[in-house]
Length: 311
Ligand code: FDA
Image (tube, rainbow, N blue to C red; front, side, top):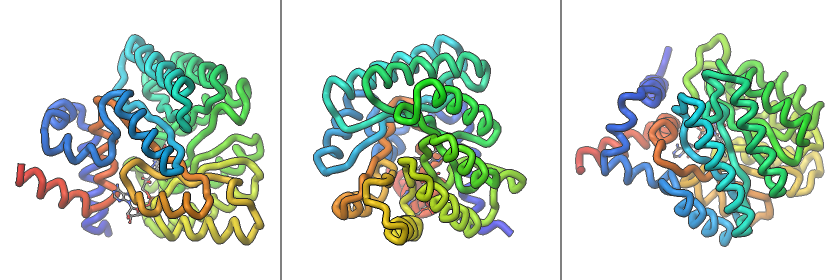
């Protein structure tokens, strides 16, 4: 039986996909203000400033230009232009950061060949600038298509230029992790943030966590440089313990967390000598990203209601 938390999570994830709400929500001042906890700003310059501040605290970053509702080939070209601008800025300013890209931004929902071509342009730019592109993972309808595109780009550009994301809530993920590690593809492991049915995803959070630990061990055993992306201290502790047990040096993998979440833990791990990378989203289309962050934690919802009532 679903708990109240499950219900509010499903409701928020449902709302996150309602196109009609986006433009209204992004105009609401109290919502914008709350979103600023999780989003570095609407402009590239805002995000660069945020990343410089993180770098000064010993944290690395991955920029993400928010825009999931791309519908035309022209819009995908705007996204490619933004990512090239971003990679040029990272290079010019010497900030310690790479980029995270969504294939739906590149046209995956309406033209997979265009999505590959666009992502290829971004990875080629990253290669020219000695940077790295992490291809985010989205809803399960596009898991296979996303892994196929990452696989093609990895074969062309190599492990230091492009990597994948796997979600521990998906039943297929352990098998995917083994297959990608065998090909030396760098993986970001996270729990997964979309609304998925029980056929493809574990409905019980305990199974999602158990799978996270199982897959984390596959990654750490592989000898490839991966990212362990979570704010869950139990997952972090399990990773630290397993790495110590396997006598891995602290730089054998990195922890990754989201901008504005568990800053204390981010700094503590960096202080202990682990590489830590913060995912820094920016852009005008912040609504779906913001709603997924609210869905992760019921307390966030009360925070929103309180602020909306106040505002
Ligand atoms: P969990 O949700 O169990 O939270 C553990 C603790 O973390 C909470 O108790 C709370 O203290 C804190 N916390 C977590 N979320 C919070 C929030 N929103 N607000 C306040 N506190 C919060 N997903 C995906 O499907 N595809 C992707 O490509 C990515 N990429 C990605 C990159 C990075 C760097 C991170 C950290 C996460 C992602 N995710 C993602 C999101 C991921 O799947 C997941 O939804 C969130 O990380 C929340 O899961 P946790 O592992 O933090 O655990």
